[in-house]
Amino acid sequence: MLITNKVGITGMGIVSSIGNDIPSFSNSLKTGKSGIKKATILKEPKISVDLSARIEDFSFVDSIDYVQGISEDKYQHAKRLGRRAPFVIQTSIVSALEAWFNARLHYNKPLPERIGVIVAGQNSTQNYQYDLISKFMKNPEYLSPRYALEFLETNQVGVLSELFGIEGEGFVVGGASATGNVGVIKGYQLVKSGLVDVCLVVGVVADLSPMDIQGFINIGAMGGKKFIDQPERACRPFDKKHEGFIYGQASACVILESETSASKREVPFLAEIKGYSFNIDSNSSANPNINGEAKAMLSAMNQAKISSSDIDYINTHGSSSPLGDKTEVEAITKIFKKDIMNLRLNSTKGLTGHCLYSAGVVETIATVEQMRNGFLHPNKNLETPISNELQFCGGKYVDYQIDIALSNSFGFGGINTSIVLKKR
Amino acid sequence: MSKEHVLEVVKNVIIEVLPDLDSNQIQIEKSLKELGANSIDRMEVVTMSMEELNMKIPLMSFAHASNIQGLVDVLIENYVTSVQS
Image 1: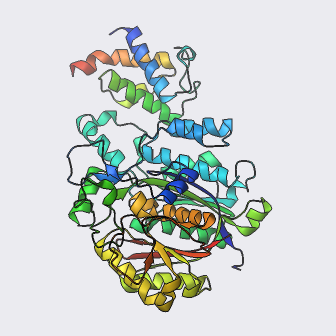
Image 2 (image 1 turned 60 degrees about the horizontal axis):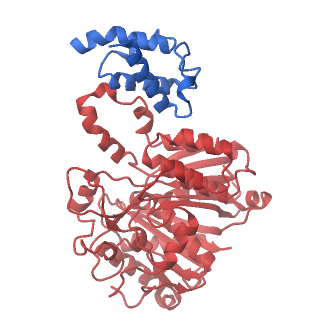
Image 3 (image 1 turned 135 degrees about the vertical axis):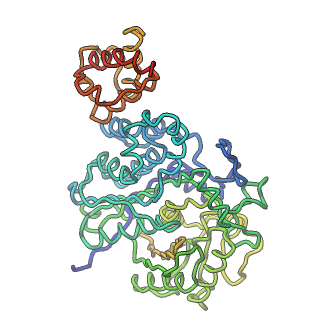
């Protein structure tokens, strides 16, 4: 297949702990607002770490009221599809609606079969199931027949495709903490190869059950112990006092589109996706790998036909995990060498927590917003960096022009991804 | 258990499953399909009504209920046996 067409982002939407639409999320990035708090709703059994960056006070009906430019038809349809759906689906609908309208697809849409949908999110019904278990144990007969639809992740594909009239390819991808990047990469491939003109990529909320959280604590991945009484200080990417990730929630959506389609519709690229890399370490464990991470960044640059001197900024994976942060610093130092002088870095997770499945999409959006608005958001809580060679953004935002950026995401099971974004 | 009570329970469940309806649209001779319920909505109305009434009967019992009247009748017929068993 002849590959000539450029692929870019023409729409974005988000529901997160630091903003329920793109303008408020972007403003929170700039001011360095943290979404991390002590949990207010406690389930049984109580678990030792209750710090997280949750989406709070979410009302589905109010949120779709708020999505600007929504037509009455779409409003009623979205309401019908989402009003009684689980929280994860409701937030996906809201972020997708914002992105859809942002890309002006509501009045100028390609043929349904030329649009694809990718749901980036694995195990997205864990907490929904956890909440149903006690009732089910008593009265299995009263389980909602809707459960058979809703426990399948592909339900999101069904809901979103029905809402937006999508008839191209539609599927779910998983890649642990790199799931969002895997979604963006698969969407890029669909558009680049000409299978679709437009692809909606939604990173879903990681709605963890108490059991999932306890699992992350027991495997030693989760932080939040040292700063249990100072939630905002608990997530510390690349700081010597980092001790593991802090869980965050966000649903984030990007619309990927071919340049031909976007120019035909007279919709601008918010940023271009220049290339990507996706490799695995042949490793079933949780540990990161310098070579795998370096290879991801290098081959993403190769695919984009650029060199390390062209990169102005990296949105790091930076999860605040001691081994993860150290490995990423070593991988970056190894491949950037002298170009490190011109490179700036930060981690969005210091503000949003680790949004797991949607993290890659959240951070693509964070990168594009910093690119478009000429700033770097603070690298929250970086007091004593683990590396003095790399130039991390400090506690305050700085004015900075990004032309080309990398956005990294790495996941358990040796999953390494990197995306190259270019300003438009 | 009175027929009025069962009908009231079923009506409330229908409104919960189909929030766009208002209660005067729900007339006993209408079918759930006419009210806009798809097959899963209809199954849900049955399951939730049984739960509200605290009874358990096989879903097959409702196979011949063609409208809300039929649904209410099956619930009443089975109420006594279900509660006793």
